[in-house]
Image 1 (tube, one colour):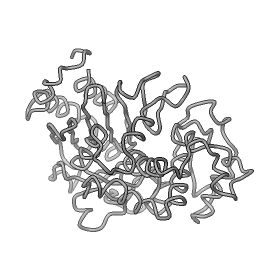
Image 2 (cartoon, helix red, strand yellow; image 1 turned 135 degrees about the vertical axis):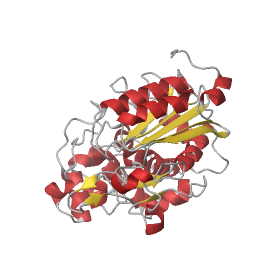
Image 3 (cartoon, rainbow, N blue to C red; image 1 turned 60 degrees about the vertical axis):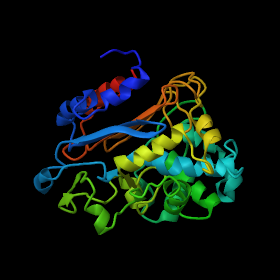
Image 4 (cartoon, rainbow, N blue to C red; image 1 turned 180 degrees about the vertical axis):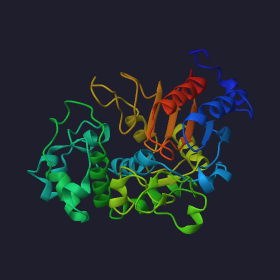
Length: 357
């Protein structure tokens, strides 16, 4: 397929039932995991979507995914929940990005993490340890985990390297709750999900009615069953299912609403155009991989150009191009059978090229 951007009027053709995107995902999802749901759209909303494969193995083999299937978003939680909440605080002047954490938390002053900033947490340049292992390191008490993350020695000097770590989102999630005066799930619903009509999106564990529409993820030896409606990420699960790094569930239908809003923010949104533009600007000063605020970006990219990306460990992915005025999402479930990544990487790359060139 050509690497040139397809003409804008080609998107409906690509996204038509049985069209190029449908065929691509149908073929590519066979080696990825339990089914796949895709959607593409523009500032007007969803242009096309499709779903392929069984929902899982065993009793799930008779079920099929669709636009209302709730997927464990894993690290897409950083975008769908944490990022807009941080943006609402920033636009209200309550979260200056370059103040150290010790400015907000007196008990963090003098601690290793007390010197890092919200900007560095969002850009993954804070120098925090790359691994979590919270239960082994700090036990199960939530206050002890927070204190342990703040007191842990830094892995690198802040601002000297880009190193993706869930610790950054966990810490920022605590800060957002502190400044927002409410748990993160309540803030995300108030600031993002309800204003955008995202009625399918919520943190886990899901209730029985929602679990019935959820994709099962990985087999859990302790439960003797696949996790379904239960957060897959062990750190977020330890934190009660609500965390900045993971824990949210959503559908292709809701994520399409979210991505549409990034191209055409509705009036009154508390994290609108100023936050979106700041977030899509490279924040890593030439370090690689280049990142904006939460998003992966191309080096030196102006917010009006390029394609911006974020992925989730379970097999979720979103892309958006403001230059082309289009977005795309691909929800797969690579952890259901195993954790292999190459087939998913190949499918993602082919899907991205087909939509964005």
